Length: 85
Length: 202
Image (tube, rainbow over all chains, first blue to last red; front, side, top):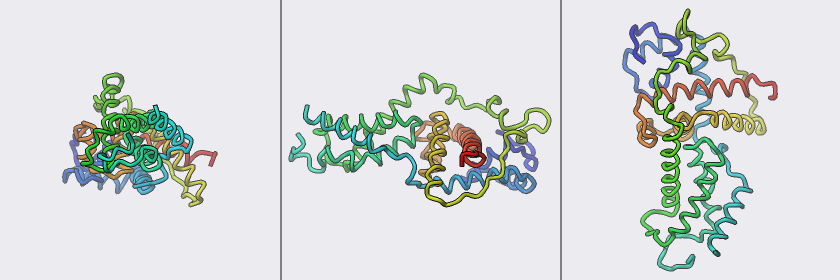
């Protein structure tokens, strides 16, 4: 996504640039465009806050993707079967 | 075979599930969309390890060894799925049909569409049960992303890995990465809003 006028970027561009900004990979021009957009666009401000909220909930989260006890039992049985055979 | 004294740092395979299954399953789920596929892959990892147990040289820890077996299985799976149906995703262009759902195309070009712009999120109770439900919905939202979007999103948002590292592992250019992340963020945000924050089930 190429930016033509740095001070006037759309919501589509701003939400794209958010990732570059977060990771410190934006150019100076992109940074100005992004920050300026957030000054007057409440919706994108909301978008950014919500993404950051999700990020804080997800980072190093231990509650996600748990293996069920029944599946573990199944795996144990399968291993046992293959040891004894 | 299990008591082979020359294999020093291998523990009894009957303890593997207890020791490593949680870790390996999470590792797989960071990179795969489908729970069943991830479960099968962990299972296969244990069985492959069992077959190769005599080749274990003890150069790495048992955990690292098992993880590398799993990693290879995931890579194979990626290769297969990329030849089948992921070619469209690899070609992560600036394809408009995706964005039209979120952003206007004619007047007010590039602005949020009225129906799909971010809404206000009510603050959440810290109730344990609610938390659990929230994460369940988040998991199901992440499962809706396609393979690469999902992997990029999870490796960044959960594992907090460097984007360079993620690109290398998933064989992406950095501009592919930005586009995948942009799309993943738009989709996840909308999904969690519809299914949690604005849902009457809560």
